[in-house]
Structures are given as structure tokens and as C-alpha cells.
Amino acid sequence: MQKILITGSSGFLGSRLAYFLNDRYELLLPAHGELNVSREEAVRAYIEEHQPEVVIHCAALSNTWYCEQHHDESHRVNVQGTVRIAKACKITGAKLVFMSSDQVYNGTPMLGPLKEDAVLQPVNIYGCHKMEAEQRAQWNNHDSVGLRLTWMYDLPSSNMKLNPNILANLKKAHDEGNVINAATHEYRGVTNVWEVVRNIEKAISLPGGIYNFGSGNTLNSHSLFLKAAQLMELKEPSAWILPDEERYSDQPRNLTMDCSLIEQHGIRFNDSIDGIAEAITHPFRTK
Image (cartoon, rainbow, N blue to C red; front, side, top):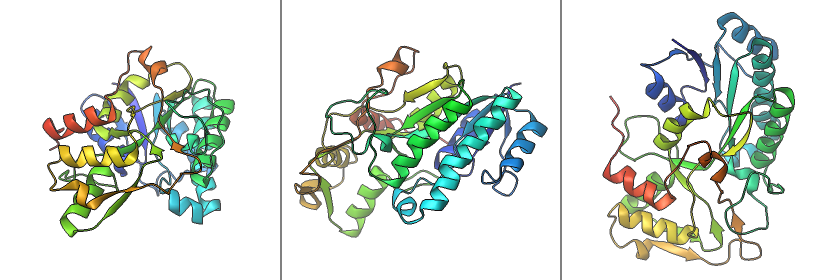
């Protein structure tokens, strides 16, 4: 049975990945105290001792606002932690799959789906650090696979850990009678986390490189939020999901990704709206 190490296995993505892979692999799911990615010797010692054949690196600081306020901590975890994992995998021969983000595209002036070779000029700390982590992980371990993820969601009714996401935010606003101001000059995909989980297993066999890894989208955020609320059957969404026409009006914010590269390897994602519809109609059942 293949041995797989999952870092960040208590997080939003990592916990679902551990659940999904549990019956078919020997999993290593260290707590933070067992594998602190901020300590290079500890990372190397753990991987050398346990000899995983695959490392799926999900541990990260993913709150963009928090990273903006805590530059050093973000760099220590999101950049240096990834580089430490990459070096240790290079030494032991483990295949590394690590998580990056569509935030590397935040600041790219082009519209339309962006390919992996687009010129990157991220405008926030999280995006800058994810870009640096990609570059340094690849430099230290050419066989590593970096996956640029979109904003992920699960159903608000999930019994597993939930992060703020499009569906949870919509339901919360609806139930509490709050208003959501959604930008008309913003474009980004959103992806069902269970689609990501299922496809990460396939990503283990990808050649080394960086890959866009999530759902496409052609709608602006206001239209996307409205359509998602309608699919969720929330009442009168146009009354509380309001268009914000000022935000990003000087330069549209475009994080949409062209996933034709992974499609060449047989990995496919639903479009954002189709994915939401499928998640609501056919929810992934957990124990």
C-alpha cells in the first residue's frame, strides 16, 4: 500500500483529502507539533524517518487578510515551509504535490482565462508568497507539482471543517438579513472542494510543473453570487446581493484560469456554476 504524507491534514482541504484517501493508502497525518514546517531539520528528519512515497503539502496560511498583516509569518509558512518540504522530498525521492493559489494572478491586467505562463505581478502578500513558493520549490525539486487552486467551497451543511466560502457566506447573509456587495469588475472561479480532492489523487502522476487546478468561470462576481443564491433557492437574492460597480473599476480583477494544460492529462473540472449546481444536487456524503 502506497504511503502518503498529508501536511495540514486538519485543515479545510487536508481533512477532506485524508477522508477520501483513507481506505486506499497508508496515510501519515502529523499534527503541527509532530511536523512543524517552520523548522527545516524537523521537516527533513520526519520525512527521512517515515519515508513517504508521496507528500501532499496542504499546510499553509491561506487567509489573505491575515497574511497582509503578518508578512514574516506568511513568508515563514507559505514560502520557507514549502521550500523545506521540497528539499526533503528531493533527498528521499518522494513525489511532492504542493498547493498554490489563483492569487498569483491578482494584478495581472489581462482579461479572460489565464494560462500558467501568464506574466505574474501579484498585488497582495499572499499572492507574492505563493508565487515565490512555486519558483523556489521548482528550483529545489524539478519533479514537484504545484497546483494553483481557486477559492474552494463545501456545502454549509457539511459536518467537516468549513472555511468562509461562497455558499457559506451567501447562506449566512441570507439568514441574518445582511447585504453582500459583489464586484461587477471582478472575475474568479470557485471550485467544489470535493472536485479538488478527487483530482489531487490523479495529480500525483503529473510531470513536474505548475498547473491551474480548478473551475473556470465567465461571470463577474455579482452575477456569480446571484446565480449561486438562486441555485441554493435563497429568497429574493437581488434584494440583498447588490452590484458594487466602483471596486476594481480602474483595473478589473481577473483570477480566472485556463485549465487546458491539466485537461491534456485527463483532469477536468466543472465550470463554476455547473459545479455549484452539482454540489447542491449531488452532495458528497461523508460519514
